[in-house]
Amino acid sequence: EEDEHEEAGLGLFDLICIGIGGTVGSGVFVLTGEVLSVAGASASLCWLIGGSVCLLSALSYMELSSRLPTRGSTYAYAYHGLGEFAAVAGATSLTLEYGLSGAGVARSWSAKFANLLDVSIVTKYFYTPYTALGSGRAHVGAENDTYIDAIAALLQIGCAIIIARGFSLSKPVVNSMTLAKVV
Image 1: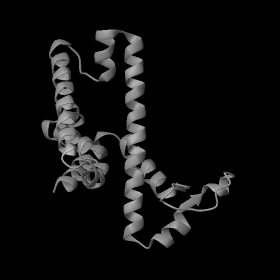
Image 2: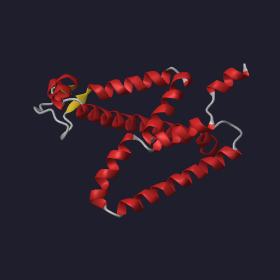
Image 3: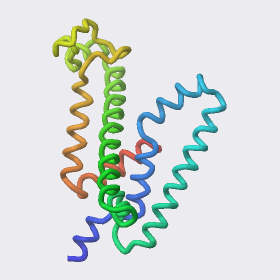
């Protein structure tokens, strides 16, 4: 029975892959190239400030995990430290953040898929213009985001299925995707 419990847990390598995978998302590669041409050297300063804030957040989680005798999450730490309302607010905010950032990454992957194939084919078969939904806009295009992206929706659904399958599927997928991004 202990072997089954051990399989379900996350090891050090798994936690490192989750941390790196969450930090080095698809947008980092695109955003860095776009920002550097506009912001110049100040972009490096912004990355240093952002990294410092992340370090402070990690240190506070480390402090809480050493003081609380429970496995931690945002909800558990906020519940013990600030009460139930703050815990629910924090957990809801984190869930919304993951949903929105996942949608952005799926949209970015969809654009890369469209560039890999012929953009006109992808636009014809996978993008639904808002005019089909009655918005009155007549043009479908990535430059003004006037379409519903079916590829991004399928990616989101696929990720939800992987997560719903549990650790046995999601751990190797997350680890392999993180290794592919880093290498």
